[in-house]
Length: 302
Image 1 (cartoon, rainbow, N blue to C red):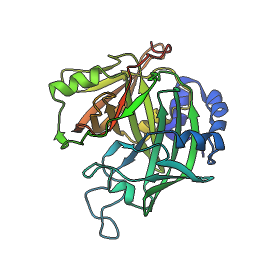
Image 2: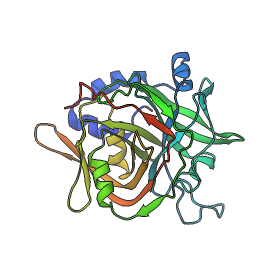
Image 3: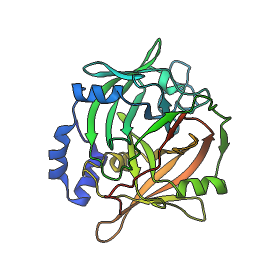
């Protein structure tokens, strides 16, 4: 099923069910050759999933998928992500020790969403499925494979790998520090992980710096700009409010991961705002070895 009840409810509220049905025909399970070639050119991949719950599962281990939702960043030499079958991608390596999703990505059957985004070409590809651990990392058996248009995606012409950059010690907190607030409000891009009863998704949000706001209570908010009318992300949030955000410093490689809950507010005239309540923040200096060139902002940005 392309859409679950949460997405259908948003589509009906906005009045785009027919358009969503038309666009949804582009979602499949197969990885086409052009998509496979795209994946092999990428030096980074964002994954989103729910961490295992802290309580015991039926096998006396951690219960899968019942914990906080996070978005995490993986990097490697191009080719570290590649299609290894018509319905499967394999990822060499894994997350840094201590990443909130480390256990989820070595647990067979974990629902996971992935997004490969190439700032050089302003292209992105999403693949959602289930994890299968492998000797070199993990694989994802695809349930949904599709591309998105380049709207709100900033162009960065080049990147370099900083060989001597080292990953710092993660800093955990329950609220944003002043420097983290500044980081968030200066961002032109972030990644958003959401889940529903049968899967997970990772998506991209972009805009001119300042498109994400942090209020005096620490709540984050951003406008939901017009997109492809699928409403996969907002549909997931309607079904399950857990969400994970990932902000990347494209120069220093620092990563800020946030987990919490999100809700969508609908204003007269159709404008939508998503509000995110923070539960935990993890900031990791130098998490990415990549240093990207300065952005050219998308002409679609409001």
